[in-house]
Image 1 (cartoon, rainbow, N blue to C red):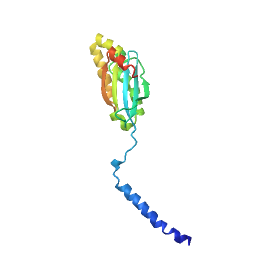
Image 2: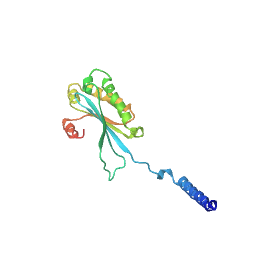
Image 3: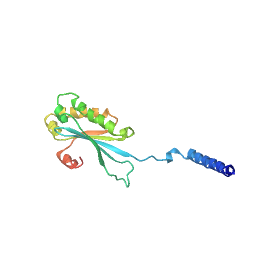
Image 4: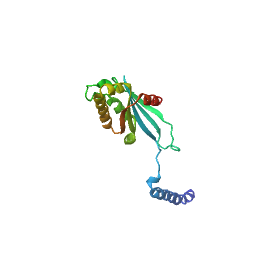
Length: 172
C-alpha cells in the first residue's frame, strides 16, 4: 500500500522537472545578468623624486551616474623620478615595468581593455621641459610607448602645471 501512494508523486515530479528544464532552455542568456563588478582606473604620479602607480575602482553599475571611488592598490616605482633618466634611452619606460606588471595582476583580465591609464608628471619634468624640451619630450614619448605596450586603455602622459598638480593633489 505504501508503494501505491508514491506512484502519483513520480509523474508529478517528472512533470515539474520537465517544465523547469523547458523554462531554462527558453530563457535567452542575454536576459540573465551577472554581478556588475567594478570598473578600474590607473594613475601614474610621476614626481620629481619618484613615481607611484595607483589603481582605483568603483562600482561598474552606478546609480544616477555616480559611484564611490576607492583606492584598490598602489605600487612604488623603484628608482628616481622619470626626469632622472635623461640621456638613458628607454630607461624611464623600463622603470615602470614592475608596477605595470603588478597592475596586470591586480585588475581582472576581463577589465584590462576598458581600464584607462593616465600619467601626470610634475616638478621634475616641468624643470626639464624648460631646460631641455627635447629630452622632456623624449622621456614622455618613452613612457607613453611603454604604457601602450600593456593591455590597458592609455589616455596620455602630460606634464601638469603647478596649479593642476595642486588641484589633483587631493585625489592621491
